[in-house]
Length: 67
Image (cartoon, rainbow, N blue to C red):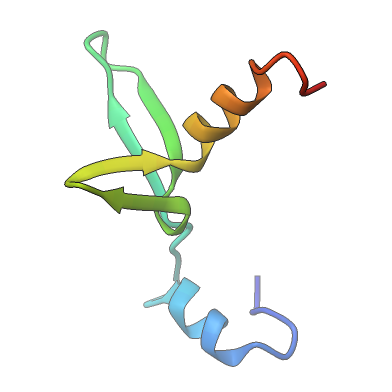
């Protein structure tokens, strides 16, 4: 990737020292597998707790009026 079209600020945030920084949040589980949780920029900290967009989406999808 050379950069974002017409967005030099976003390009400089994402491409640093010839590396692509995606902002993925990951961890290794107890078996040593790499687990991708979400994107850092999609996370909200509220009351000292990390809230991920993915978790919110999972709760919304479970509501009976949502298809």
